[in-house]
Length: 264
Image 1: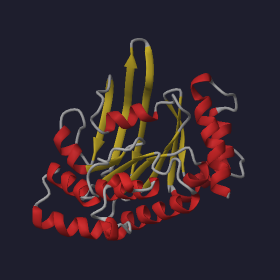
Image 2: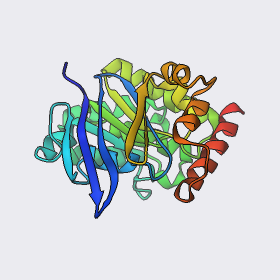
Image 3: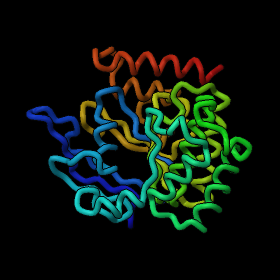
C-alpha cells in the first residue's frame, strides 16, 4: 500500500539527547490522524523533519512517496501547513494573503482566482476578502490560514494546534470545514492538539509519542479499550503518566483548560 505519510526508524539527536528516538508509523491517504504527546515529547521535532524544516539524524520518511531529505521541492508542493503561531501578514487583506501564497506556490493565475474564491466561500470569509487581516478575530485568522494552506491542492495537510485559544463554537466550525474538505478532496489530515476531546471526536487514528518514542497507535476507541479508560484524555494520562514534568507543566495546564472550554 502507498501511504500518505510513512516514517521508519526516524531519529533526531542533539548531542547525546534523542529528541526523536527510532519511531515508525504510517498514515493512510485521506485519513484524519492525530499525533499526541506532552510538551517535549518529540511532536514538533517530528513535524519539522516531515516538512523539510529539520534534517533527521537517521531513518527514513516519505510524504506522498517523496523523501523530505532528498526531494524537498516535491515534498513542499505536496503538503499544506497551519503553524501553531500566526503566520498571516496583518497589513494585507485576506485576498492578498491568499494571492501571495498562490504566487509563491506557482499556482496559475486562472486556477488561482477560482480557487481563492472557492476557499474563501468555504470558510465563510468572502464578505471580508478585502479587509485587512489585522481587523480579524482569532477565529477568522485561523479560518483564513486553513484556506491559504489548501490553496495549492496539497495531498497532506499538517495542522499544529489549529484551534488553540479559540472558543468551542469556533473550534467546532473549523473542524467542520477541515473534515468536509478532507472528504471532498481526499486530503490526509495530520494534526496535533492538547484538546483530548477534540482528538477523540475527530481523529480516525491516534499515535501517542512520549520521551521521543511512539507509545502506542490506534483508533481512539482502541486506545480507550487498551487502557480501560472512559475517555481519550484518561487513556492519554495512563499512557504518558500523571506526574507533571517541569518541561511539560504548561502542556498539562493547557490540556485541563482545554477540557473545561470544550465541555462548556
